[in-house]
Length: 372
Ligand code: ADP
Image (cartoon, rainbow, N blue to C red):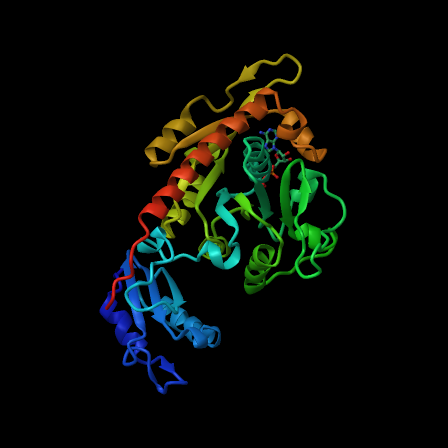
């Protein structure tokens, strides 16, 4: 694909007019910063602070227009009311990839991580819940956001009945259980209600579950992403300010194409991939305890290395994991000292370590916007 250049973007933006100031945004010198890398475009528009709230349509117009240019994979436009040349870029990531800022949607959440899979049924939700519980066990304030709008499963997995309440009369509170806060579409609509969500509604539902919920201060929010790697997922990945992503795969999928698709999706939007979790890695016989390596051993670790991903750990195929999930009492909460909980805890510790390192690096290297 041909790469878009800064000049092409500037030329295209000459037709965008700031109606209040009756001139195009290039002539008005409103472009304060631009970064173009591998088809990802990040732009900063400088505006007067008092006009900021009114200029969202203009920001959107610029974003849409840039996104439509040939060779553009993603476009992110932010308004800044800082003095020219002194405005720090929103995060270190914006230097490489235009992505939304955590501060906009979830100002009190230190890190948001996505748990994703190339396809459904690999145990992504089971892994998300147990990973969130393990992070909480390690002492981190943890939230779980079920972003699977079509097939939410957090209510069942955490055994939650009833809906969320509001303590301040304005926003809804997430539901707390087993030491984590959670929110899911299933808490908001009746289980039986057929949900016919069009693309944009999925988007806004997800944003609402972040913005309009009293998450409070969190160290980490685990987002259970919808399965697959289609456009909806890609949009979500772009809209949710992610510190990183974890990919869940079964041994047979990692050798196949699905897990790679997940990896590529995150690389496309330059979300750091924290690593791969192999679920249903081997079979623990419930009656004799014998371990069977159904798909051979070590394949996922090797495959992860080949793809340049960290291998975070393996979880066996074990009836007790399924039963505890079905009972709404996931294994990390049901048997916190057991071997499965220990496996999830080890994975959680690795995930947290990398997230923390990324956050420190980001804080240390926040770049300055380049003045055009
Ligand atoms: P996904 O979110 O990828 O669609 P789920 O987490 O809903 O997958 O898991 C699909 C089914 O597999 C569920 O019935 C779940 O209980 C079961 N399952 C997931 N992981 C394991 C495991 N490690 N051992 C046994 N059953 C599992």
